[in-house]
Amino acid sequence: MKVYLKIHIRDEYETIACCDEELLNQVFIEGNLKIEISNRFFGGKLIRIEDAIDVLKQAPFFNIVGEKIIEKAIDCKLLTREGVRFVNDVPIAIKMMI
Image 1 (cartoon, one colour):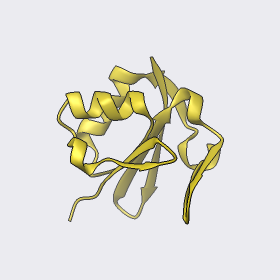
Image 2 (image 1 turned 180 degrees about the horizontal axis):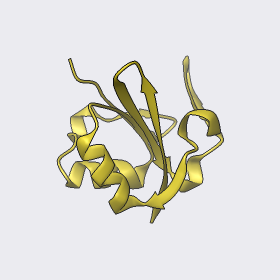
Image 3 (image 1 turned 45 degrees about the vertical axis):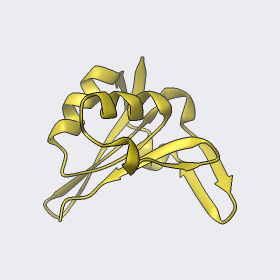
């Protein structure tokens, strides 16, 4: 399985954006919620999901979208199932360090 992963750097902080391969360039809307899986934000390198998990383990901040990457992140204890939200049945999770 492959996912797109992109590293955003602002000041000294890194935010990792990662999505399942098939979700790139799609928009999901549910009521007043909207998520755009844009190439600009998510469209970095297409890599193996295991390699993405290695990067996410080190990330202080991340945005991940899609069943495959979310399930793998839960399996690897990067987040809990309770921390996952859905927009039009698409799972989304955000990690933020305080």
